[in-house]
Image (cartoon, rainbow, N blue to C red):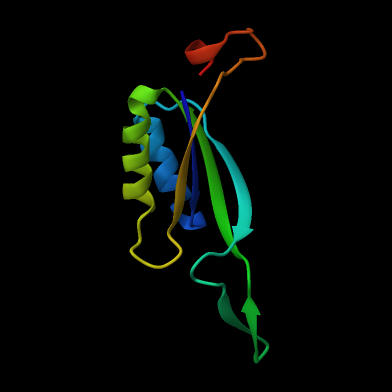
Length: 112
């Protein structure tokens, strides 16, 4: 089992979510986050004054999947979140040792 964590641009969330549901993904955790990478923030104007925004709004998606479909999930996120511009985001993949569904006490792949 794998945990796929993607940090993407906020306006790409719905497109990515729909594509993941199309793959049969039944659960996604979404968190609004802020950060910066190579783009180092951006300059904005407010009431005529220019200022630097160090942290840009992003969306963090977390999806637990079976190892068999992890490549499909990654390809889908790559395709649907791509704009070709700096700040498109990152995808991280972690090994999951185990998963438990609290309500039914199911464990492992059954808990997905």
